[in-house]
Length: 332
Image (tube, rainbow, N blue to C red; front, top):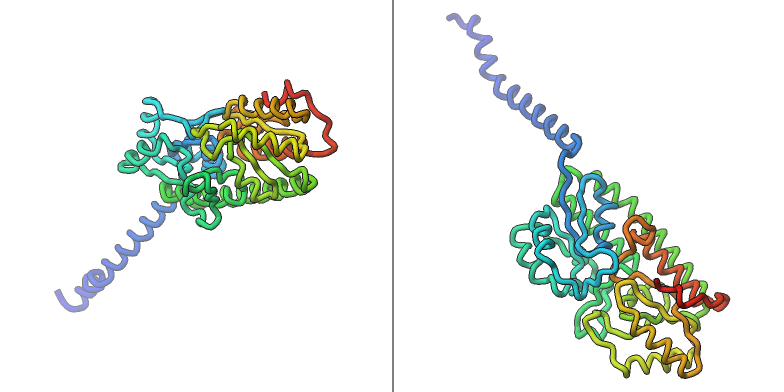
């Protein structure tokens, strides 16, 4: 073979490897791009403890997720104990989202065990500590009811977004866009709550409920909150606590107190009877949703609808111009 006839072979030998590498890179990039843009065939299984977190996941995840909430309408997470069926549901999940801050007190051990083999995320763990309430009656622990400060719930939304992206990187753009839209909705909700409570005279801004779930709400929206029980419904209300609240209601001529959907109403009814014995008529101003949302398919069955319902119920019942409703119909 002369030198001229061997030249094509030499050139091919020199340039073929770079060309092959370039072609392989282009093909790999194209395959990756098509995989990320291709429709998802199997939704990611997300299991949440509370209905509020489930609603958040659905708003951010959309049809990329199949979301299951363990605790439904009227369920008290403080005393909830996971069943054998719940444990199977949790074990089969791709991602578990829970509130933390001791809200799911009786499930804590189970969640720790599951974290050894499943992605388990505490959705409140990125909230700065200086924005968490630490009431003295809660023995050095933080108040877990962060969803009642809508601005804090925006931070939780971002935490859920990041958890979904970590579990499903191909959906990053989807989760980012959905979270941005939903957080904008939450900002509007926060403004609505501030506006409604600000319309009440300062002397009327006293919210009395069965248990202390509304501390963040009171701090965020400028209303004093008193409760018969502590932050956890595991605690017991004493006669001394009830008498002290009766004294306050009578002295300040508070027009209404509130029952909660996930807490028995007997202690609130004891307040009403105690005030009546002292010559002060206080009515049940309505039912508030505290540790769970309303019935699925209703406005109160969403986080935004639940908060709007609570705000409107409080503002209406504590307004000086509000005529007293029939207390036998309220809170049911």
